[in-house]
Image 1: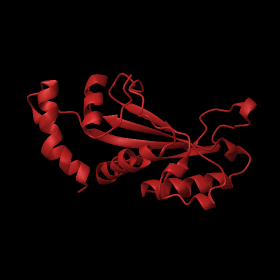
Image 2: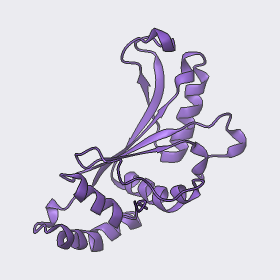
Image 3: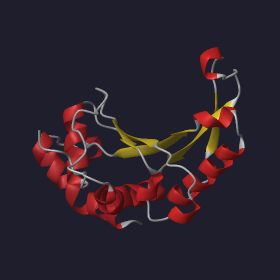
Length: 180
């Protein structure tokens, strides 16, 4: 198992039980899944860009991404319904903890002018979404082969009932929140 999961089982569950006043250790919030989504708007003109995005996302996550298709046609953006416009990966279990560990300890500190992630990006149900503007912050990406910067959305889904519990969980797991 990953070192973050081991730490969660041994230390963090007990700490969260005390902090949140939860008696049952099974009721303590935990990570459920991490969804990484890359939109490739230029794929409407050049479908090869989607293949590049899929390859980069598979290098970052260790899992082959699924292609996302347009749900409806938008003529202003030259998008037809069913046209491939992005890719996404859902990570669970071991890969999820390993990705979160790398995200917090390696990737986020490499972001330029990084002062912490916003504590306001929770959705009200205990899930956290983080946007990255560039895929080059991941050490798996070779910057000599990158044609253009491509951003991504990372959604961390937890079993927390509210944002306060999710904030406490992510803080204990090492998420560097900005002090406001």
